[in-house]
Length: 364
View: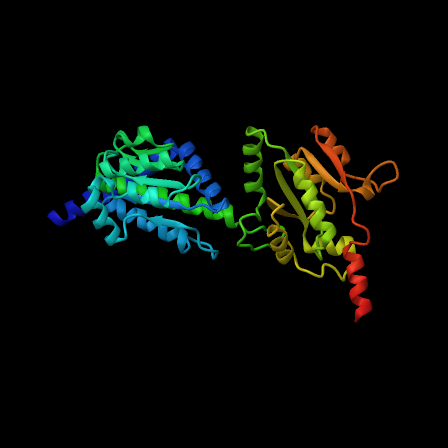
């Protein structure tokens, strides 16, 4: 009988915790989005995540770091995340020489760089070594994210992004923290490594994005008053004309987005023998170029739909489209409708995919 009562109490507690997690996530949705955007941007810039906490929070730091370095759901390249709770030689040396309050701060000073993200975890929000770690992160130019409980403690007041589980039960707070950590992992993973259903593209390059991610970035660029440049094409056999045009397009603004025709659209545009290079290889080559910031695959035969969605400030075309004698531009009205501009880029003589194919056929 007593066993039944205890079991019912535990089950009721778990139900209450599930509700608590949902309430915390709903209340802090904006902060969770802000944190995931910081982590996402950090990985895109080649930065890393530093995580730290004590006891169960140390385990959470290690758990979340493992999800980023290994994988969460998708097969993909590893992402740089370091739990500052695992190296016993470092921890004991710092604790012995500088005091336990400095065990995380000293590591942040050694490893952190501007643009990295520090995730500090404390159920009370008042752990002295966690607070010192955050202060070091802020001084180093890292973005600081705090996961706390109760009223957030002092941690909530010193981090850039604060997420607080409104409970005084340590176990319940920790359970919510790992759920929030899993949200970070899944959202960031999906943003960085989404599969494009239309283009059937799988890529481990963070420059290759889906529309949801690209449009979210577009809002950010708009807020930051950045000039967005777009150009598009098949890019079947990349040649010097492509490279120079992309370099010139990038010079016109802050962000260059390159639209790439899907395999099916290339077949319709160029004939059954094309593309020579499949789309997943074409986007990978483009993404490797320094001048290219993002690559998106689209199915339509013209970029009108893509332009109406992204609304870039500048749409680049080759000089063979320039008036008065250039080829028609079906998307011109779309660009004008939202106030965009069309820029014409000079062509490199005899540099074209068709010319390359002709030469290869002659050689064979």
